[in-house]
Image (spheres, rainbow, N blue to C red):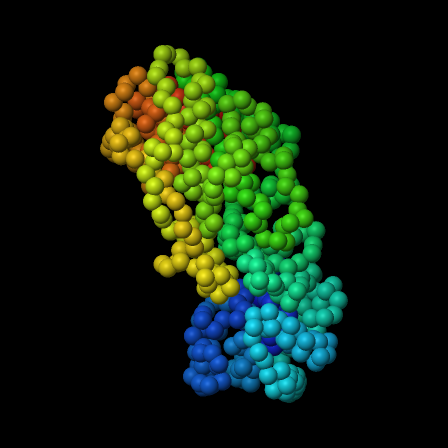
Length: 520
């Protein structure tokens, strides 16, 4: 969003006091493409309160500003060192955020901090607030720096234009209204933080800009979702993007070409599209998305409706939610219970296949056949949260924080040893070299009347492998990146090719070469 002006390489300091919209300006700066940090005592190493070790804390803050890689800094401890900032960084951009009058600020302070049972000496704080704001204005004028004062109570369109012009943005951004006192309700867990508070028809783009470049989206419910991924899945989920008729036809043709090639080889083919977490748990998304419509024309749904060998078990998982959480709170994948229901559905589909030769079919293991233990978990998305959002777990949600950077306890289900008959075998080195660094597993079962299978999989199948291996005489599990490899299928000569992939990757079939027999 930034222009090619000199502002791109300048530090930006937001010197407003608490309850003057620094969070809103911070979000605005992030949406403009700047690396911005807000309320950063922990990250900077500055001790709180910062004035008690003023000289040492200034050195810590200065080093952090120069070495952290951030472009913009707001809220405390920054405001304490406004004099030093003007002296040390005369080429920086300085922003002072204010309220329309002192009574508005006082009321906001009292209203906000009372929600958390924090008593304030509001008269003393008022004197300090007025004095520092006055000195900031005087210093900015005397030192002739680039300075912008913005009243957070002014019209949001006016403020957006003012700040966009000051930063020399290519396009004017609209102001949000983050961190308002009314957004907090500490009596309920989801009200202990206020995230993405903005009424806008363009809520998705707003949240994508605020969270960029992170792929982790934190909600007020303490759940973390995938965002800013290469597939733009949330755009498809909310209908911001959709397949054209030609894209759908191309994807369907790719699938049918695959299935036809399998039929010619006397091989059965099933494709399982594992629903994304947001498709099963939209209710725990950030509150800003509550008015958003969920699109029923997503690629996975269209593909499953167009090809009878493509299965999208969203309805199965939506129904199974009543038996317990099926996805990790901090991860993009189904948890052990979710994997169990996926496993049950896959085996049900296997029971309906007409194989080209007589085979034995094993029923799915019931839940009592699984070993049960308690496990703590963090998640692939939780560990990617930016420090600001991650701090909420040690702040507002401190009672929910587990040791070792974990965020939840779950029941872990693994197939009990007495039910394991399939043995894991070494995989030929030439095959490993062909497939790269992704995990490849080979299993052999003593019951040779079972069908033989090649399973192309991704990370959505991590907890399915050992269960599924019990249903095949020989099985090869290959990490596929959305692809099916013709040469591997030919060399293995299976009865079945089972293809399991995450929903977000389905969109890539729009770009596959439909002239290929099975799609490369």
